[in-house]
Length: 227
Ligand code: SAH
Image (cartoon, rainbow, N blue to C red; front, side, top):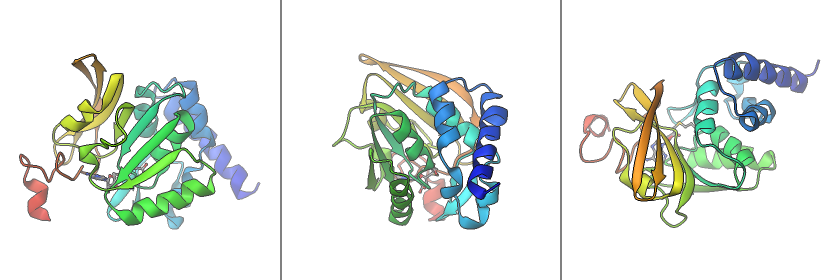
């Protein structure tokens, strides 16, 4: 069996035994994950570990999230294929690539230019063309492209950034980990006219969301002091 077949089998195993088995039901999400080569988004020395259900380092002190959590967060966006979506925290580009397979247009923002450039290369090599890469402070959202049908934040925020709520379409959904520096609550927010509703999904652990509406903002000083 060649390496590509082996990776394909490992992906199929991962989808059935760690993602569907834990309750993710959206068939479009499951089949996109079964297609997308996660091993190309991790560091070379971690490729053999790419289909185990845990996060892995991607450089600049950042991580690619655990596959089950990526699947769960993606499912929560309820994508049918025609949406405009914003991701905060491009990282390896894996989540962005998945969104590109499931939505019409994706914008993704990363604070580290180096990570963004690497992610772009991998995604282009896969022929996924509906993703727009931005570098900067994603805690501000992306007002020039708003509104979005879905916004997904892949870093832990101390509070819900108000600009993200403001940049949702009516009916739009925001998926975001919110909480302390070391553990967060995954939350789903949705807009209904001028009202917002939210639901708590499960405990998660993400690297910190930096920036004005992240841990560098006015209220939480913890990370700012660490530099
Ligand atoms: N979605 C990624 C994993 C992201 S890890 C993947 O699929 O691989 C979180 C990322 O958020 C890190 O790359 C970090 O640099 C980035 N990040 C943190 N705060 C940010 C901010 N305010 N603006 C943009 N990117 C941010």
